[in-house]
Each structure stands twice: as C-alpha cells, then as structure tokens.
Length: 195
Ligand code: DC
Image (tube, rainbow, N blue to C red):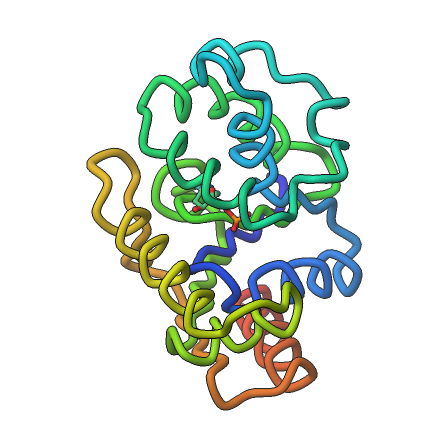
C-alpha cells in the first residue's frame, strides 16, 4: 500500500511549509492542491471548463501566489463540478508509488479518507494574517479581513467544506515557530508509522 499523508487546514497556517518538510524527510512526492484551484481561477472563462482542461503549464504560471489568485481560487472552489474535475488527478497523485503528501482543505475528508496520516494544521486568524502580511505586504487589517472572508467561504461551502477529519491530528501553530511546527509534524508521522 502506498503511504499518503493528508495535510489540511486554513490559509497561512503553515500547511505548505510542513508538507514540504515532511516530503523531504520521508522521501515522498508533494502536491499543493491549492495550486489547482488557483490555476482554475486564474485561467478565467468558465471555471468548470478550465478545471476539465487544466494542464501542467497552467500550474506553472507565476501569478498563482497573488492575493487576486487566492480570492479567485476560493470562489471557484465552491463549485462542485470544479471539485469533481480535480478529484481524479489528486487521487492518482496520492496513489503514486513511493508515497505522497497532499496539502489542501479536503484531503483527509474527501480526497484521501483512507490516508494513514491526517494532519490538520491551524492557527488563530490574527497569527495567520500577520504571516501572510509579512509575505505580501500592504495593509495588515485588510489582509486579516481577507483571511477571515476566505475562512468563512472555505468552511461554509456545501461541497467538501474545510474541517478536520474525525481521525486527524490537530497541530495549532499559533505559538510555534517553523522548526517547532515541523518537528511536531515529523514526530506525529513517526508515531503513526510505528503503530
Ligand atoms: O491553500 P491555498 O491558499 O492555495 O488555497 C486556495 C483556495 O483553494 C482556498 O481558498 C480554498 C481552495 N482549496 C480547496 O477548496 N480545496 C483544496 N484541497 C485546496 C484549496
């Protein structure tokens, strides 16, 4: 059986950093599934058509990390047909030989409900907004408002809302620095692998 690590949580909680570190530590491939939604939003036009025709070039655009792309991603992510179109790609990635880490919002609940390791990485909205603001600059209050609006949309959508899987291990990074958060995630994976 392939080894899959599902990493979910809200924006700027540290999912990406932790997922990349886990992939390096355990020799796993890594997929940032948020990029798929960002690429669909950035493509413009009908989002369902965009999701069905997504190419690897679409994932390499250099504007996918912008606030505009994140806003567009969160909007297209509420559309069930968009989510359905991206499902097979994510499941195929998760099943690759050698194992994989996938990070997103619904990996442990919908994409890989049988993953042996499920982590839910979270932090307070203020801490997450501050981290995002350090990256993107601008007005911190506006960044906080954006984080809260995005949380609302991700948590309250009907299809695959953001929530921890029943068997997810929750890691709150509000009071942890990067090293401590990574160490906690690695220790959690090791503990589960040892069982
Ligand atoms: O992780 P991120 O900030 O790149 O995600 C961008 C948006 O995509 C986010 O608002 C929610 C959505 N998303 C999702 O619905 N499901 C995923 N598995 C990953 C991201």
